[in-house]
Amino acid sequence: MNEARFEFGKNWSSFLQTLDEERVDQAIDSLRKLLQLDDTDQPLLGKRFLDIGSGSGLFSLAAIRLGARVVSIDIDADSYACTCDLKQRFQTAVSPSATADVTPDWSVHHASVLDNAFMDGLGAFDIVYSWGVLHHTGQMTRAIQAAASRVAIDGWLAIAIYHDQGGPSRRWHAIKRGYHRLPRFLRPVYVTAVAGLYECKFAVARLAAGRNPLPMADWRAKKQDRGMSAWHDWVDWIGGLPFEVAKPEAIILPLRNQGFVLQNLKTVGSGWGCNEYVFRRLDEKTAG
Image (tube, rainbow, N blue to C red; front, top):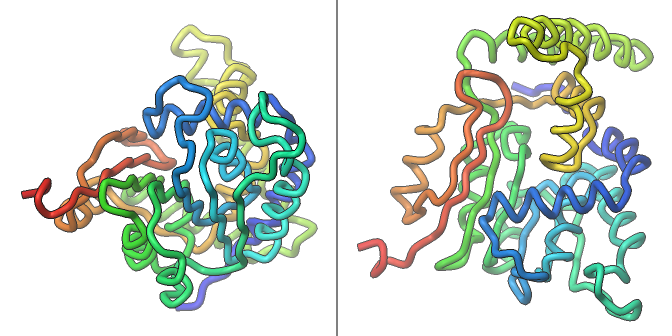
């Protein structure tokens, strides 16, 4: 079934207007925690890093700052343009201590993870990273396999996939379809209404727990977590189609059968959002 496709790149273009060094630093910290990196200046020095669905380019930049050689890909033309723009803006700033004439090893491609010939041509990577992207391809299982196929032996696969809540996930799918049925000028109003409803629910929950009901602390935590903004995340979440979900076992077990060992897992419990998975690919001798 052909489904409406959210214009992620237009949302990222708006987000880039808010990007500053503080957000970059938060993204770097997020990547360090996810991949369980050491606290040296450039723990990914010389490592090949594939960013599938680079979006704004923020996490490609974070990998560059950590010393990686980065390949960024995105099927969305505006997202591709955003990553190119970010690369241009920060191309002489590999790390805070870098000299001004250093040019990062960073290539950006307008391409799809589902393009087998293109993906095969990229070769193998030490780290394949795709946060909150593969469930938007319309072919999530195939996309996960395509990402996994680019991981070198002893390399790492880091992905984030929407959690399957059952009925609530189906209701969110309906909310997303409602967004795409509206004319463009009404979509911000729709996002404001839906987000406002849920923010009110969150406020009541905070108050019931004896906390300040205002959302500022949670919004600051979101920025500190991945350098993101609350508004742009709401737009992405409410408009984001295609939309697929999975329980952790549906992600972990197929990859385990292919020699991937889970190294880090962060779930949303019974809530909505992305479960984060980090796998290491073992060779046959090690796996055996």
